[in-house]
Length: 129
Image (cartoon, rainbow, N blue to C red; front, top):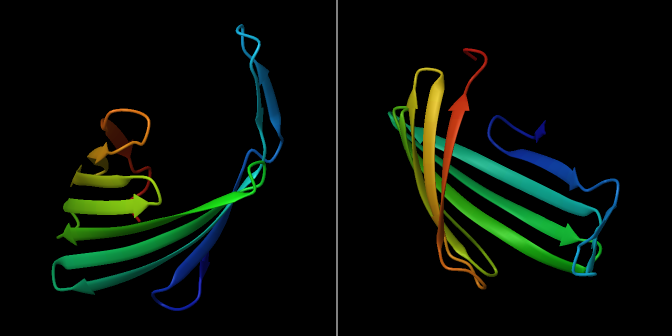
């Protein structure tokens, strides 16, 4: 991550740096090629309210295709969070709550091929920073 100012943060993420090959029992072959993600976020806070806007551009080298992700997070007092996001094919809504160093998150996402799904996440913050 790179912090351009006291607010704007950018980053790059590489996935599948080493390509993988899978052959399924059905005889279907699958190849995973590198994916490059470029992202940026900008936080704003006013009293106990925090707002973070974020965007990511995703380039899939194997498919010669791209996608974008847009998201917004509203937080209150560093404890309760509400999130929303979208890309070309789906929408996401979620919320989270923190208890000291522990966190609980739940989200809902639409899909083009599947029914909408839920995700639940638990987290632990290793340091107090």
